[in-house]
Image (cartoon, rainbow, N blue to C red; front, side, top):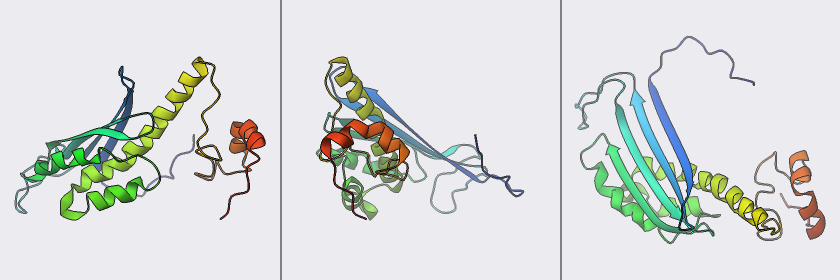
Length: 196
């Protein structure tokens, strides 16, 4: 496995960790949960109006859960700020329930930025929605394909081409991965070439 080149001498200052997990619920819905933490290697005093934090103690520790249906429609959302730098940070958490009714699809990131721009949201919770959205695709689509395969149903195609085709360099039309992965679909659909 290739790694980054050796780094110059340096000292660690800050660690941000984002963890996202996808869950299949017994009621047929899906939960996607994300957690974000920021930890510094030095003490943080209260001179800028923020809470005092010791080195290694999270400045931000926040969680967000989206509940989705099979069409990636958000049916419920919940945000919790476990630890924040300012006393009133957690006041905005309930606003994230307004994600209900949005669908994770093209335009989702823009809709989120409009809905939670500036003082209408929390920078960190809003940032967490990007990794949560991609985790939803990573968790739900394969699970739905396994369900279909178990029932003897054909693979799920959405629209005129496989949903991930041309979504990145490796899955570009004509590339080895796309040719192997979607050979049958490409042949059956006789897909027109994509435009740049």
